[in-house]
Image (cartoon, rainbow, N blue to C red; front, side, top):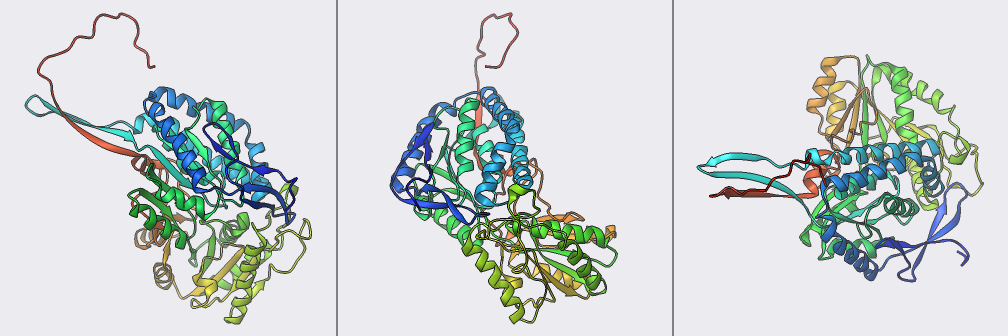
Length: 499
């Protein structure tokens, strides 16, 4: 790294903050070179951000719902008008193609729009005359300072699963983005300021494990929201809960697509390619295993192979279909799984380690890879590879396919492709997975439902966004009241207004 590279600072109390001297590299994956440096936050930086958030909470939590949602609406309008600008930032640091970057921003905007209607969901309940002259009612109140730890694969969408709802409900936020692609969070911080959010409500501390650990145990942080690999999710959950915090920790996945003989194989092939290789497979909802019934497996492999041959791999700013992986180390790790597949007896039908790429020679390239007849004992099947490697596992029928899916350690997402309504209904009931698609390969719920899996894919009691998000970022208070004398508010003939 050279000293003339741009340095990405923290954002604390409404302004950039330099903090400590430790720096980390931020790569342009399509060029394979360091493009920026990022400050790696210390415990002192986290302390400063939490202190700013705590101070802001005193007034923001007392701000009316009407005024809070006005800021949300302004933020939504500003972001909607500048999607292209933010997408370019994401592509430059993550590598995903521009259309995919814009797509993740759009899905994040859904949660902002959901949060704009928070008044309807923040309402409590009221029971009049629960006892003679006694009423009982409930209130939802914000937690305080909340921490959000975000992964590299969705630097916009994943933090936006959490912070719009948290802010709308009166909480203040400290975001710790991935040090691999941190610029999007700083850009969003400035946009919040432009939308009228008071300083200190939204803070960003960049960094690595030191910053994460400081957030997890900080006495003034009320909750932690995390998305990442299962081992780290479990660590975050256990560390945070030991420190007395609410924690929602979304972990890893190994998502299966079950293909029955009556399925439309053209639809299946399109879906498998889209869900397996979008964002270079660096999605927790990517389809990484196609479970094909033997009678259609050969035809399906042929159709998938044909479609893979049409994909253009290269720099996401050049109109390609798929970009590079996030780092050279990750690229090499994913490529090693292809070696492992061959060693374990699988057939490498399409080898992404070979081929031409529309980008710089030093880019972190690995093309879409298709591996057939993968043994379920192989690490290629059991591990979350998090790259463009699609495995085919063959089964005799529905029962064997269902049992295979249910035997896995993860339970994030799954899909079934069939034209048999009875089979689909049975599958949605019997499969032990948190998010299910029926002829839909990436069943990410819309913002007014909630996102999260089962088993080793989720630690904690609440999922992300939707009504689960409202529950997570509020505490309920029950009030029992008896009033002996009525009060009088005086005369005012003006039309009542919110303020």
